[in-house]
Length: 259
Image 1 (tube, rainbow, N blue to C red):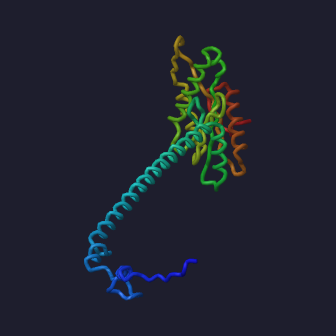
Image 2 (image 1 turned 180 degrees about the vertical axis):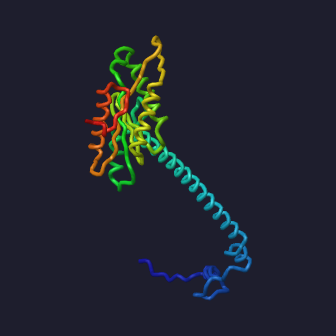
């Protein structure tokens, strides 16, 4: 049997263990604070800290500038897109209310204008002219439909030259046209109608292989009365137009001349 042996720490090892802890600090005491040189070199007010803050600020400004530029470019693209969209919508709106051959307003636009004139209070007299190209089918049959189209365009251009900016000319359908004359008396409407008739009669339309294609128009004139609506006013002007055709064409007839 091996007898128990007691071990003792060597005085040398004990001395080494004692030297492992600082001799100038008691157990439980705090570590020494940084020196003044360390605070000057690395503190918030130190040159290094200022440089770091300046660099961070420059980086932040550069990032914001880049993001702002990107945002401005996106906004500019959106503005261009909105402008193009508005233009396209306006072009579609104009196409919907414009006769593609003559460039005048079409019947849809005429109905809209008439309804607008009746929507508000009556501001003054209103007259309308309804006119039709005489013997238009004969022009198409004798000279061709392209000649007929040119005749329609010439009549439309003459109307535009005769009326005021507040008046509106429409291609009602086929060879028939209508002119709205707000703030126009009976005398003023008759005078304008006669002027239009004379100018169209004086047109000298020359076409390939044809020396001259005569064009005349017949016109009916009506003025708004107290109980009128757009339909009743148009019907009276239309009856006056057909009376002008019945009397021989190339003339102006007012509703009061109807039998």
